[in-house]
Image: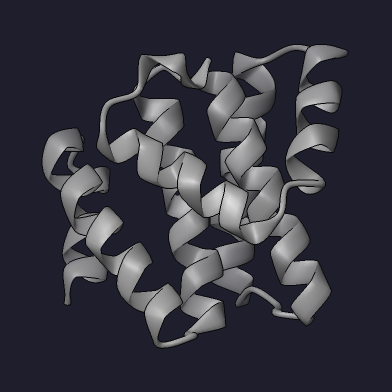
Length: 130
């Protein structure tokens, strides 16, 4: 339930509440090994980072989530894919090439644990994410 509430909070731009709820969901999904939901939640953390003005962290988390999905062959639904493409367009607008590509490459090489730690750093309001 926290995950869906966090998604609603993110959509409503209630970033503090979204941060808390999505953080709780991320930990729960990892603990019970719900891989598809973990990938979804990591993508939502990328959006949260973007909404907080942390473009580089957003791109790294998006790349890590994308790589995780690819490794496990977890596809998005058509609707989720359209949202993903819109998120990617927004991230490209926020971080121009060649910086986007360099940050994406670095994010795609992150170990899952490192990506989850970075997502959790959003919970602490870490300004160092840029």
